Length: 276
Image 1 (cartoon, helix red, strand yellow):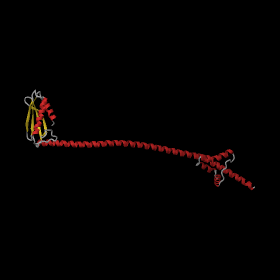
Image 2 (tube, one colour):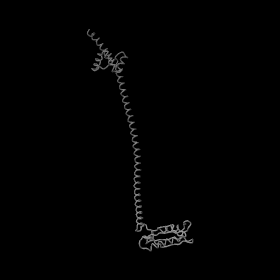
Image 3 (tube, one colour):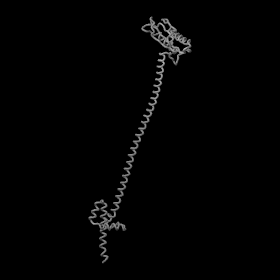
Image 4 (cartoon, helix red, strand yellow):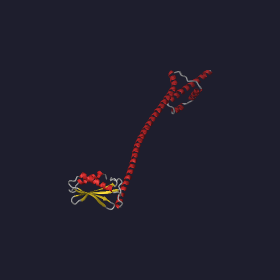
């Protein structure tokens, strides 16, 4: 105990009352392994200067501790007695160094059953506190790790969702590009088919409107073969072709068929005249 702690206790005990009784005296008992010995008594009355008495008791306590050489640690018990019957109502135990008269940091219990139990309880308390402190540090460490992992998981989930959104957007743009490409291909194919049909029909229409062959076909073996083939077709064969050809193609075939028939008839009529 420090001097201030002893002075504070004495001051408080001297000014306190128990059931209306004022303090009568304070005793200082030296605690030995097997017994205790009262080494000082201080009487109190109404005229006692309490602060001076507290300082005196502290000095007397420390003086007695310094006067003892062995053992090094000395233990004392202070008792406050109140009223005419002088009943002990308050006690205080002080541990001091015998050489310095100062508080002993590493307190030592007496070598008896009571001292060993107290020492064991004190050591158990320290061990439990150390274990609980280490466990708390481990829990705090794992709690910090879990907090960091949760934050990282939130970041990764956000990144994953953003990636999925971008993939869906890119997939949609790809489908739109494919549709636009297919539409352009179909448009070009339709134009080519329409142009080819118009080119087939133009000579026939021009010659028909003019009433004379204004756009004669080139005379080549392939054309002659086609004309010969069309000239040999019978009407029922032409009807069979109508089931597989579209109107424009059928019109071109009929025009070619009529031209081939007319040329065949003209050739047949011109042959007898040359013979005559």
